[in-house]
Each structure stands twice: as structure tokens, then as C-alpha cells.
Image (cartoon, rainbow, N blue to C red; front, side, top):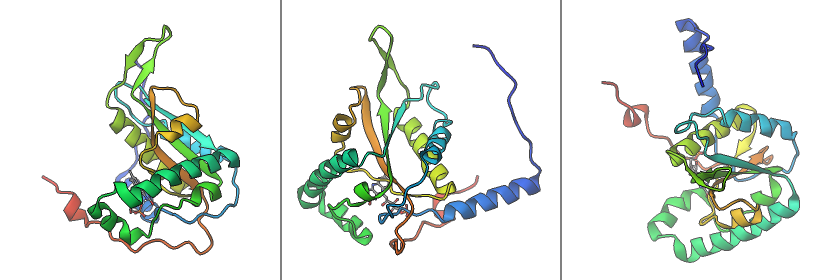
Length: 218
Ligand SMILES: Cc1cc2nc3c(=O)[nH]c(=O)nc-3n(C[C@H](O)[C@H](O)[C@H](O)COP(=O)(O)O)c2cc1C
């Protein structure tokens, strides 16, 4: 409780222009990668990026998230198996024709080899509610928005650290709660393989909407 002085570092317009432009150029190089190398990297780098993610704002500062870092090949292989089972259903029955047509350009299918290959998988969980000391349910607010912002910071931090990521949403993802032994108040939100891209990794040629299509000034 109480208030403290804000730590604020004022920049000149020139510094702000330069920093914003440089960061834009860094982020313009981020792409979703589906072909990973199995080269290892120190877990501390992954932890630093998750520490960045949890600086995110959240509804009433409830921080309604939990992150699991998966390194164990046996657990990865269980996850791959379960994800592929769901994805087989998705690609053969569950997805609508329109959805499959929209996915066509990415060349994706039910196979999820990257879950075994990438050195780390991060699973993000959202917490619908918290559990108090007496076992009572405590409300969380704007859970989707909060976890979405934290996940965005995570992807940004991983990219900024020089790593490739895939934002993966095997549908549905309930099996992750079971395999990772997470409590009932947590729901899987994203599965993020992280590592270096494969040597010959290719990405689909896609375009982003123009700035004027997505933003206007009044
Ligand atoms: C919420 C969300 C779910 C996604 N789910 C998948 C997925 O399950 N499998 C996949 O290959 N890509 C998935 N993607 C990646 C998108 O296809 C990708 O971000 C988009 O095509 C834009 O490409 P880019 O990230 O390289 O800019 C997902 C992205 C988001 C934001």
C-alpha cells in the first residue's frame, strides 16, 4: 500500500525517434517459425524473457498467468502425441472449409515435429480465478486481455533475444493441463516452441496490412 516515486527516464525527441525506429526494424524481422534446429541454449535466456512478460500490466494487477518451461524430451513427446491427435481431428473434421482455405498458405498440417525438436516449449496458462488461502475463489479481471499482453511481451522479448518462436494453438488444448499437472483454475492459452530456426528454415510469403488500413489519427 502507498505510493512511490515513478522511475522515469526522459528522452529527447531525437533519442525517442531513433529508439522507436530501431525497435521497429528489430520487430519487422520477427516471423513465426515452424522449422526449428535442436541446438540447445541456456534456460536463463528463456527465464529472462518470461521475467519480461510478467512486467505486463494486468486487470487490477492480478497477474492472471502461469508459464511452464518444458525441456524434458519425454514430456515434449507426450505433448506432441496429444497435440497431433487433436490436430488430426481438426484438419480432418473440426475445421471449417473457410478455415482450412485460410490456413492453406502456411503449409501446416496435423504433424507437429517442432514440439520434439525445439529445445524449449513454453506453455502459457491463463487463470480464470485465483484460489485464496482458505481455498476460496478470488476474481481475476480482464484475463484474456492481460494474458494476451503478457504473451505479446514474451514473443517480443524472445525475438529481441535472438530466438525464433511459433505461436501454436492446438485445438482444443485441454491435454496440456493434464500432462503438466496444472490446477483447475488454469486454462492453456498458448504453446510456444522456442529455439533457433532450422538452417534452411523457410517462411510463407505473406503481407501485413498497410499502416493506413490499421490506424487513423483524429
Ligand atoms: C493466437 C494465435 C494462434 C496461432 N496458432 C497457430 C497454430 O496453431 N499453428 C501455426 O502454425 N501458426 C499459428 N499462429 C501463427 C500465425 O499463423 C502467424 O502469426 C501469422 O500467419 C502471421 O505470420 P507471422 O507471425 O510470421 O507474422 C498463430 C498465431 C496467433 C497469434
